[in-house]
Image 1: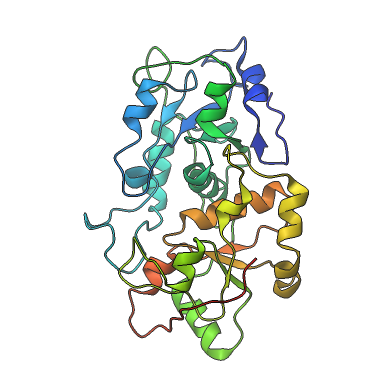
Image 2: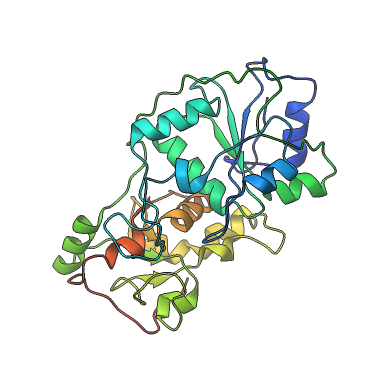
Length: 305
């Protein structure tokens, strides 16, 4: 049995204890999903095959956790650079990875949970009730001296597909039309841009073809929630950081966006680990927002959380 810390995070040591003495046939053993990924980089599969948590299966963020998109990753288009996958496609991917509704799932990436948060959000939005994230990811597991497996993903023997049924809608999110209408009407919720400060101000935009941020949004970089080792900062520290933003947002919490929805999910993970109302995300985020040239944009300094 896994004992998570801060609700949704599990330490490498605790995961090692949970895995000790179990095998793939044990229903209490969690399904382990490795979603190592780098924005604009090659697939994380070679890294996975070079070393992973024993029994973990690799999940590709670009092809299994996103809908198909053009080869030109920076192209502005409806849905953004990483559109949410169709429920049937996501369900099929999770079943291939061995996910079942009644079995715990632990997800991890290279270190800071940025990619793992995407899978955590998708699974919990689709109705899975037992998903935790390895705090510090592969780096924490490796540096802790825990067993390492190499080679292709998955346990030895035939791959047993899971029976997970995806039922999206368990988490709140906003789309562009609804958010644009609320901004125009002056009724928008508290909105936070969780990209880096330079991208928020428009000083630098290395990924998308247009720089800037949503009008009225505050800057709240998600990577400020993790330390140099890739682990999340203490829950009390994260909660204190968002105190003023939450007071302005009200009981439903703020709306978070980033470049294409992935870092926004990371912010929700940090907040849930800190015991806060998670809030909502705008999955298409900035790359979706700029696909319509009539949507308003802002540049320059603004409030920072």
